[in-house]
Length: 174
Image 1 (spheres, rainbow, N blue to C red):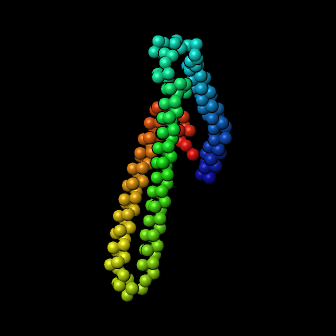
Image 2: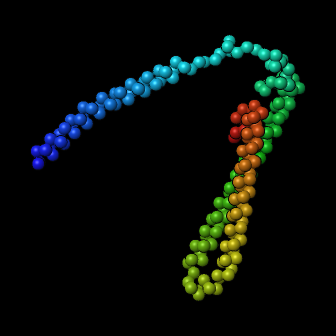
Image 3: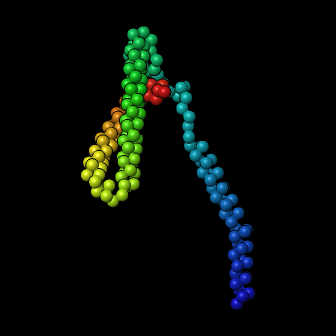
C-alpha cells in the first residue's frame, strides 16, 4: 500500500516537472501567433491616404486650431475666458472642501468632548449637544451637496473646453 502511494506521488511529480514547461511553451507559442496575426491586420493611415475635401476651407472661422486675425483674437479670448472660469471653480471647490473638512473636525471634537463628560454632565448638556449635532449634520450635508455641484460644474466646463478644441492648459490650468 505504501509503495503504491509513493509510486503515484512520484509519477505525479514527474508529470508536473516535465509536462508543465511543455504546456507553458505552447501557451507562449499561441500568444506569439496571436500577436503576429494582430500585427498583420492593422493598417496605418497617413496624410497621403486622406484626400483633401472642399469642406476644409481656408476660412479662419471653420478651423479649430490656432487662428490669426480677428478670429484668432476671439479664439484666444475664449480660451482666456474658459481658463478664468475653470480656475475660479477650482478655487471654489478647494474652499468647499476646506469648509467640509473643518465642519467634520468640529463635529468630531464636539462628540469627543461630550463622550468625556460624566453621566451627570451628559444629562445636563444632552439637549444642547443634540441641537449642535443636528446643526453640524445639516451644515455638512449642505456643504457636501454644494461641493458635488461645484465638481459637476467644473467637469462640465472642462469638457466644454475640450470639445471646443482647447488644450489642457485651458481645461487643466495650474
